[in-house]
Image 1 (cartoon, each protein chain N blue to C red):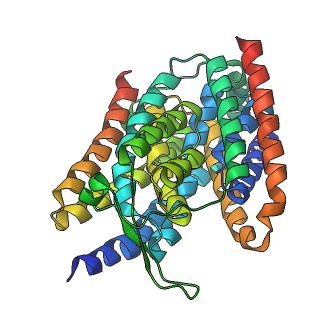
Image 2: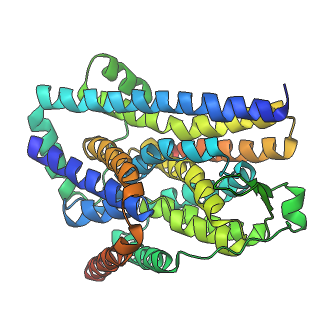
Length: 276
Length: 131
């Protein structure tokens, strides 16, 4: 028993650690690890991963909220979209065949790899458009590093919300936080500052994954003997990763992360084709 | 007390404390459940894991009252399941805090939006149970 439990814990700690260092979250790595290394079926891996995403995100966003980087109003507006998507996705995960989920996972890995390469640029707008102004979504960047507080606007809320439904859908179907997609929606589509997008995405991930996890738990689709060590391990790995992160040159690791994501995408795609 | 003070106190002081408490309780239940299982029935863990590896569709729908009762009686599987359920309370609690914050501020647009999110979480649970 200790060998199996220790193996699951090891996989989970490593996934949480790499997830924290890459900024993609542990879910992206624990699902393929459970599938490929532990030979656990897709549906069980997704259920366990959703629980671990909830556990990791619970502590992750506290510092951002405390320091004023999280745009709480934007998070609440967009959570309406992500929760709708996540509940739908988690419901569909009980119906969709495993090969289709694996194929979708492979595509999401490629999107994450693209995001990891492209991760740069900030196209901040000074003023919000009519809908965002009505919802009072604009905010101020906290003062720091010699900079004064700076106002920023928000635009294209409907466009961002559509992408958030997709992010929620992917979270519920695949057991991931969909942080990369959320940041893309806020940064590229709604033009929120990058750090505000990351902080707000962190805040939203727990609620999105929680919505999916509740469907899985209520349906009885969470295998406790796997989910318990995975949740503990991914959280421990993520905590360790966040401690190590300030002392590591993440830029130099970026190529390695992209290579890992592409390898996972290829393996998952191949599994999907074999299962079709 | 101004809205900003209110937000500061609720969001930046109480929310992290309560969320971390829920997290610690959930982690403690999971650890206790795993240790109990290793102590009481290591064979069950191995055979259950092997069975899961061979199943493409897993479903273990127990009544929640039975789970809590079994957990109180020290049944490891029930303790861990209750731990996982407590863990999923974290996002629910977070949205509930925001709901009460906006309600205090009489910001009805955001009261409606957070209520929608809360409803979504509840509908998800019901959908999983009956679906």
